[in-house]
Amino acid sequence: MNTAIGTLDRKRLPAGSVLVVGAGLAGLYLALKLAPRPVYVLTSRRSSKGAASAWAQGGIAAALSSEDSAESHASDTIAAGDGLVDPVIARLVAEQGAERVHDLDRLGVPFDRNEQGELYLSLEAAHSMPRVARVKGDTAGREIITVMVRQAQDADHVEGLIGWRAESLLLDGQGGIAGAMARRDDGALLALEADVTVLATGGVGGLFSVTTNPRTARGDALGMAAVVGAVMRDMEFVQFHPTAIDIGRDPAPLATEALRGEGATLVSANGRRFMQRYSPQGELAPRDDVARAIFAEIQAGRQPFLDCRKSIGAHFPDEFPTVFQSCISADIDPRRDLIPVAPAVHYHMGGLATDSHGATSLPGLYAIGECAATGLHGANRLASNSLLEAVVFGGRAAEHINAMTVPERRADGVRVQPWLSMGPDVSQSLRNSMTELCGVQRSAAGLNRLLDIIDELIARVGRANPLIASHMIAAAALAREESRGGHYRADFPDQDKTSRSSFMTYDRLE
Image 1 (cartoon, rainbow, N blue to C red):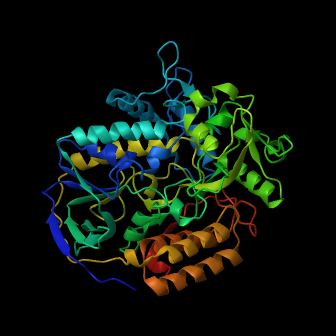
Image 2 (image 1 turned 90 degrees about the horizontal axis):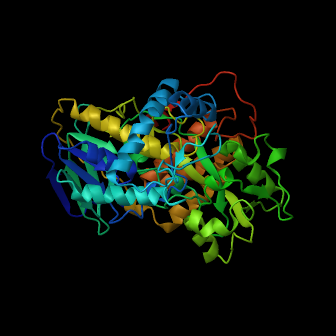
Image 3 (image 1 turned 120 degrees about the vertical axis):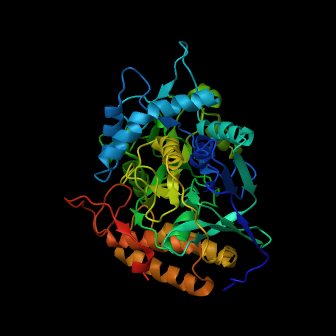
């Protein structure tokens, strides 16, 4: 195990300033809304390429039309979450959603509009009406992040700490968090002392071998926070996007849900639709239902395809340019060819348990975006609610921090995580095992075997963040002896009559 400390520098951020770990939508929106409070954004990337927000294709959901309402949006969110959504949080997010989208519009996000100049709204699975605002068809995430990066670069109160990856949290000796330890590729370490630390690092897709996420999304925040005692919520709930484009790439390109909202169908090689055999809602069933149906077809030896020829046809390059280019690069022309698809890890509903302002169980530490578990998504995220949650909670956390008297926090020690010791062999072994044993279909036998594998890897390289995050996901999946939302147990296929979120701390698993 390599935990040797190389060159170690210490930097004390100005009193009252905020350290934001991660430069996706949640982190950047928060940073802008904290003005004029000084903000330092820690990111290993020099562009938006590593931010999962930039890969979001569908758009951002909100009650934006006169026919829609916050009540309807909250109701759809609660229904999709399969019994575990906090109704207070769902209503809060739905009520604030429209204003946050209009705020993005004012910041310069070029949302699609109809001939009357109104926001063009598309229909996605499990929504009762069209309410997803899109940008240039399927480029919402990329366009929003481009605007946010530009705004952050122009903001006098925001400073980027670029080229560093956070690997552990600094403790203040009184149960709170006083910043983060970051490592550069050359091994240099930087202890950043901060009065307020916000984790906005994204999800866990990189822990699995088949994912639509950046490979760097490996549960960093979860591992860092878990080893210092943070409470985690609903870690077992991982959403598999049903229609990753199955062309053998890592990460897998995504065929957005909006395609099915526009009428695309799921078919076998012979062109026959199969979703009606699995759900009366067909192609617009909740994602977990569609993912399991596609998984079942693959297991039965029937390659599933997405048929967009009639519903999209010649308009494909203009309406869905990202999907079109992914297909063309694999010699598939979706205007006349079927698109092979397979389920892939897409979103983590679980994460650090937070309150309605993004505050975690540890004083001085907030979590927003996908690494947080606010109670909005429950067991299964409603399509296009992820970007919405990022801006709503980014805004709420900023308001909460700006309204408080921030106490001074000094680091009481330095904790070094064995990040660099996780070489390609360990990473690939973990990813393969997570996909095989903690994927679309799970069982006690498989999860116990997975936990043994993770324990062996920890014994080899130490408590690296991705291994800690994986351990907690697997342990939570083993403990939930029912099937609900994105969590399906072959040995417990029925749903319990009583719905309950799971809360856990890492020390109780050791």
